[in-house]
Length: 114
Length: 109
Image 1: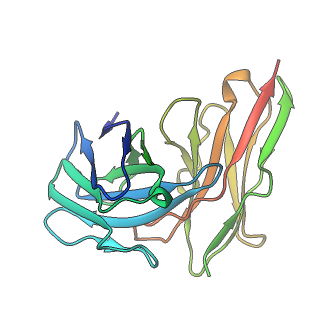
Image 2: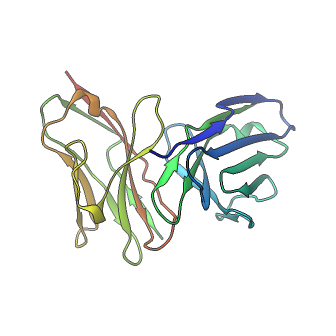
């Protein structure tokens, strides 16, 4: 089946620094990638949708200048949390989809901002 | 507003017992309905979708448009079914899911 990877799996950073998370589709070309955030014991919340070669579409309430998304190729999307603060600590999950078919999820990245 | 409700946070059943995980939705238009599952230490994966009318790992789900429900059922639960289950409607023709809060199923030996 289709595989989506995320790197890193967990990251700890200091407040004020920026963190980049990569999402890769390993064996298929993803026309669309999605970024979710999951708080402890809560559901996945869609942050943004990105299509290869175009600007990401952010959900209401998500700061696009804080969560920079780049989808430079059909197999790679990156999420950069800029000037991270402790409240940005969360579990970030990406998913990838090919032509409106099933979304395949990555394993997630746990971010802890000290 | 689009909303999906999974009323049970935790559901414990004994092995071999029937199980039903409830999902109710409030959605404009005609959404597609999905169930996703996350086993311990694994990623989220698709379990089944209503348009396929399929049975996966013994699970079925019937879309009841009158009650706006999409409950997940299995007649005989197995220990390996223990996982987190998410109901997720999706606006037809789009990519966007709205995930429910999830139900943790524990199947006891």
